[in-house]
Image (cartoon, rainbow, N blue to C red; front, side):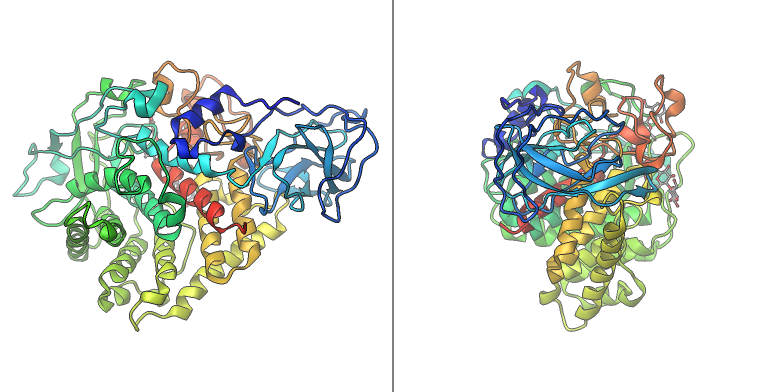
Amino acid sequence: MALFIPTRLVSALALVGASSLMLGCGSSSGGGGGTGASSIKATSSSSTATVASSSAAVSSTAVIAGSIKLNQLGFLPESAKWAVVPAGSATSFKVISTTTSAEVFSGNLSAAATWSASEESVKLADFSGLKTPGDYLLRVDGVKDSYAFTIAADVYSALTAASIKAFYFNRNSAELLTAHAGIFARPLGHPDTNVVVHASAATAARPAGTVISSPKGWYDAGDYNKYIVNSGIATYSLLAAYEHFPAVFDNQNLNIPESGDAIPDLLNEALWNLEWMLTMQDPNDGGVYHKLTNKNFDGLVMPHQATSERYVVQKTTAAALDFAAVMATASRVVAQYETQLPGMSAKMLVAAESAWSWAVANPAITYQQPSDIKTGEYGDGNLSDEFAWAAAELYITSKKDAYYTAMKPTETFATVPSWGDVRGLGWISLAHHRENLTAIADKQLIANRIDSLAASLQSVWAASAYRVTMQKNDFVWGSNSVALGQAMMLVQGYRLNGKRDYLDAAQAMLDYVLGRNATDMSFVTGYGDKATMHPHHRPSEADGIAQPIPGFIAGGPQPGQQDKSGCNVPYPSNIAAKSYLDDWCSYASNEIAINWNAPLVYVSAAIEALTPK
Ligand code: G3I
Ligand code: 9MR
């Protein structure tokens, strides 16, 4: 079968830097493509591989409903490789080369089991033993062939690059030039040089109506506002990816305006947001505005057409602490670029410490949406995790023991990170830096916190009918970021103790967002044969281009369906893991957001860096 690369994938690849442009790593062919071959040879050395003597065509058995679900992009040679097969009478599976139509591997399916999140009875195919690079599909008697997938040593490098480049596409205060953005070039939107201090944020030094300049940053999501809380976890996740896996990024060329300077492009991109965040701190007292926003969400327009007045709204404790955590992290990451960024590292640490001091003096100021402001809230009544995270990052960077104590380590557990629960981020950083901490740090406690969370995720994975860590109650708004957050914590467990199950379970969650899920879709725009096409992302919808901007991950299924009154099309299902609508209207299942893309960057890079070669 001829190699077929979907047009959207070619364009997606063309947008990332030349060093990442590897056509061989894209998914190659639509499902149902295998044709019979008269003589088939086994190329795998696995014990389960058999030589087939008959045609590899789909058997004459009636095709049952449901589809084979797998990572539509593919796998590294040494990755664990699993597919989910609808439960029918078949007890075995075959892997077929889409280039030669030969059967290259076969194996037995597991016993049928039900995944309660999707209410489906499924069997599992484990083809981890197939390690030979190539393009393949999975075949099971009585079921439609799977989508094609690739096994290649560089299978995730374009995904890692595109998921970072998505941040560039969401830049506030930037004109995107054709040279960098291709067909997605657009005029500058939101200069944010005349931003009004809202009454909720007024102080004697900056009364209501004061005009400040607060340019740059990224649009939060499908909307054009900027929120410090969400910027916190998103920017941290990118910085952590760099701290943990610098080799993935050091020579990466994302074809962004800063490409070619002496700073890795991932950090160039993170700096675009960090520079904005610095402007959100009131220099008079160290407090940090919660958000920079319109009064109302914009209509369906491009950035330069969205010209409503912009406000900075209320200083909150969560904003100060998330800001402190990120600035403390960034301070140590950019320290190695003192020549290129003179004074930046020191400036960031000063900013972090003054935000911390403000939070300590104002420990319970939660966000209260003013009556004239209707945009996102990121409100959070529990601030203990924000205190713990900020304290952990300040401790690691400053080495001041008082911050370690302030983290309250014995009371603080590790959890899967989300914008509203950031405890896990502090443990991630402590684990990474554990050999360079002062004597006060309890290294055993740090290891236990990480390992006990990873172990509990591993046991969910091992018992899951889909071999994933997602369970029914994980299907909240932005469920795909829950999946990737789980993977991030499994990665920390693997980095600490090398337990292969942790890496395999993390891989499973990358598989999950790329197709091994109950919707049978890849949730990453531009990646996978059946991928999200209509994200709730204003530029993707308003630009008049059929394909979405590549590299963005959709929020994902969740049964709340808070948007359905505004949708002319129904959700295909009310079941938690299937409650996903690939339509612009669906902001509750199909929006994109920086805090969902950042763990995609982290996990894709981690799998690239950690999977044995
Ligand atoms: O915390 C409860 C949990 O206890 C409960 O079990 C669960 C059941 O659904 O709900 C949880 O609360 C949810 C909360 O997110 C935390 O996950 C709310 O129902 C849900 O409505 C809320 O959704 C948030 C959404 O804004 C609406 O406020 C998303 O987390 C948040 O990511 C999203 O963020 C928006 C910004 O406001 C604006 N920009 C776009 C961005 C992405 O959609
Ligand atoms: O576009 C908005 C999205 O970014 C938010 O996550 C979402 C929930 O706050 O709201 C979206 O805006 C919708 C608004 O809430 C209701 N009217 C339709 C808007 C989408 O076009």
